Image (cartoon, rainbow, N blue to C red; front, side, top):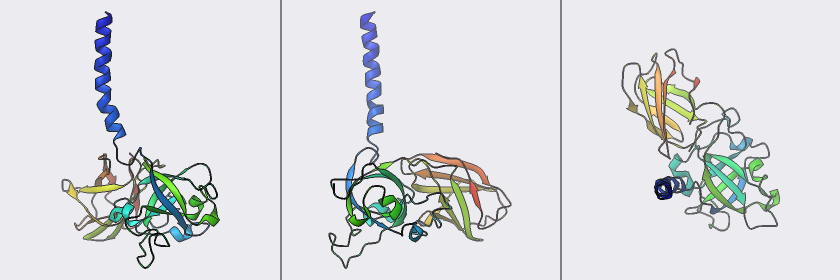
Length: 254
C-alpha cells in the first residue's frame, strides 16, 4: 500500500513540473526588471489624452490617470498598447515612496536623439523607460525627483466591463478601435466576420486601430482577438446590423 501511494505521489510530482514551468516562463510576467520613470501631462493628466495608441479620452475609456507612455524599446511599434505594468521606485531613498502601482500603456515616449541617454534622452533606444501620468508618478516618488529608477514587470490587466469596439472611418475604410482589454491587454491580431463571410484578418493601422477595407454597412459584425499570451476571445454578433460609424459596442472579457 505504501509503495503504491509513493508511486502516485511521484506521478503527481512529474505532472506538476511542466505546469509550474509553463506558468513561470511567461516572458516578463514574473521577473522584475530595471528601468527609469519620469512624468508628464499635468496634475490632472489632461496632457496624456490622445496619444500614439489611439485611445483618445483616457477618462471616458476607463484608463484614468494610471497610464504610461513607453519608450521605443518597450512600445513595440504600438503592439504594446494596452499592456499593464507594475512599477515600484527602486534604490533612491531620498525620492522613493513605499508601495507600487499598476499602469496601462497608452502612449509612446518618443526619443530625443539631440540629447544623450543619461541627460534628457530618457526614451532613446535602447533604454526601457516609463513616462508616467503625473498622478501615477506621485504614487511612487516625490514630485521634485523628476526622474527615478524603478523596478517593473508585466502583469495581467484587470478591467471593469467588457472589451469595447468603436467603429470609425467610412464605407470601405473601417477603423475599429479596441479598448479596455483585460488579461495580457495588448492585442496582437484581429479577425472580423460579418453576415455573409467567414473570418477575415484585419490589418493594424496604428496603435490599437484595426482596419478592414470591406463594405460592412448594415451587417452584423463579430470579432476574434488574440493577445500576446496567445489567448483568443471570440465576440459573436457583438455589433448589430443597424450600427453607425462612431458607435461603441461592448463584448466579453478575458
